Image 1: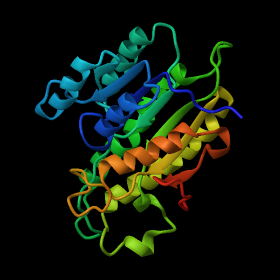
Image 2 (image 1 turned 120 degrees about the horizontal axis):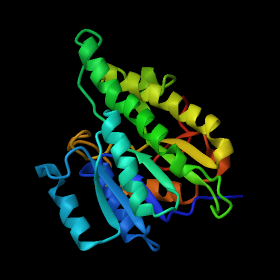
Image 3 (image 1 turned 90 degrees about the horizontal axis):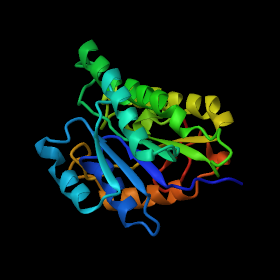
Length: 251
């Protein structure tokens, strides 16, 4: 059974939180990827300085400007990644960039819903669409599978709405992650003939700017567990929705 061998990986929203931790853990892995494409909206901004310093120490980290909601930016990032791949394919795409706003059924606005959907659904759609040609395993020399990992959320599970609705209504976030889960299933089905595995992963309630200080899970532990899932991915798991421990979550 073919699995994913990671010589190259691209992570969106990699200047902080879960995305930045993915970059660090890939770097520290037993066989680090030859290319770690760390993307963010503003590589020169204050929130990207730690990523910039890390890339200056490690030549296999390539920091690339990418606004996932901007088709022009997405197209430019593909060209930049192609230069560094030098004819090779991309092995792994992690759609991590996301936003959350605190809105209830009473306070939810159409403007906020659209803004959150742009980042949490349209962004992953545009990025995956653009990088699909680099992920395809159509060449004879492309061994194994490639993979797309969508960082989703338990709050996007329609079946689990009653359990956590009262403390976490977050309407636009919930709706966007449910839509992302559908997009992930569509990617798994539509791209299976190209040798691409696709999964949606709930990282847990994590201590990040989004998750807050009360979250029970450290970013290091969350990403470490997700790294284990990624390392053992096979085509039998494509189309699944799991948590950071690999447990299946109902859609």
